[in-house]
Amino acid sequence: MQDFRFHNTTDIRFGTDVIDAGLHDAITQFGRNVLLVYGGQSIKKSGLYARVKSLLADLNITELAGVEPNPKIDSVRAGQQLAKENNVDVILAVGGGSVIDASKVIGSAYYYDGDPWDLVLDSSLRMDIKQLPLVDILTLAATGTEMNFGSVISNPDTNQKLGTGGPNSPAVSFLDPTLTYTVSALQTAAGSMDIFSHLTEQYFDAETDNDASKGMIEGLMRSVIKWAPVALAEPDNYAARANLMWTATMALNGIVRLGGKNSWTAHPMEHELSAYYDITHGVGLGILTPRWMQYILNEQTVSLFARFGRNVWQIVGDDDMAVAQAAIVATYDWISSLNFPMTLPGVKINDETNFDVMAQSAVKVGHLNESAYVTLDVDDVKNIYREAMQPMKFEY
Image (cartoon, rainbow, N blue to C red; front, side, top):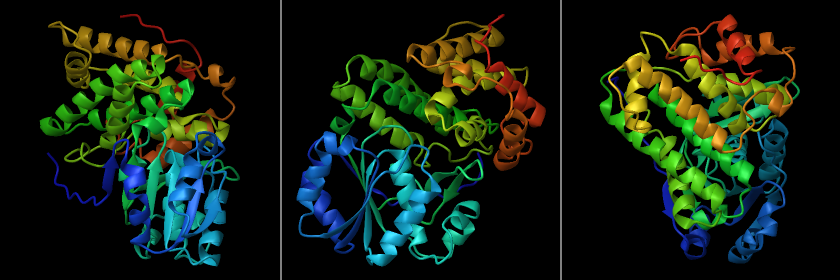
């Protein structure tokens, strides 16, 4: 197990009554000037917007609406300007991962006089400045951003989608599973796939003696595998929504990555798809993940894939390769059962026009040829993209 240091101070408030009971005090501990950040009209249709405004009626609220999925740097720029003009004390993000991700970078940009894109290109700049405190109300179980330090921001002008880390995780995160009852089937499926992918990225790691982390990941994988189909079939099933929400948080709050050694692979490859085609992140991961698994299965990786098959999918057998192959099929079948498009043409990527430039960027940004679980070069990534143009074939 590799050496590590872990520090996370996010105050999690989980349950059905936590917002009314605690939101006002959670905000006013930092001040009375609030930047309220949210996405489209969903929080207004659900009544959450009016509820929040009522709870904070005595505070000075400035609003930044319209943060899009795959949050764009222009939203961060607008938030920076509003925060500075209104002497904001605290940011309240109401929404899913995109809203919270943008809000984190806005929190840093408040203390920065240059273009916020600088802070995405070079996270180290954020470590030398303060960050406004962030309180969030989560409305989608997916990214885990409610309890971590990271954000992913897109710049359509440069076809880049990049991760950036800041000095602080959210100060307080309100997690009410009932707020996810109205999440669409597509977003529920995409969020569930994002959770699953966060777990696979950390599980397939070359540190062989990290049973503590791998065991936790296996349990979380079984949770999302079990509860995602239930949430799709019964959108207001509290147990399903609650388990997905907490699994999402635990998948990426930093705990299960501890002691590992490798960087991620599927995410850098998918970020290129989102950067160039603005597709739904979880859908892109659903298309790429089983292809990546099939591509890297070999004599060196088979033992971990077999463990994955036995402990996550309950596949029985003494032949490691057969169990590993069956695990990849089970993964593909589960993703397919979420009613995903399972090929790139299914998300309107119909040719290889950008494959070379995307593969080059994925390798460079993700360090795929240096620190991935199985190192990949540009040709490898292009091959995986090409495999994703057709339905998967299993010749096991």
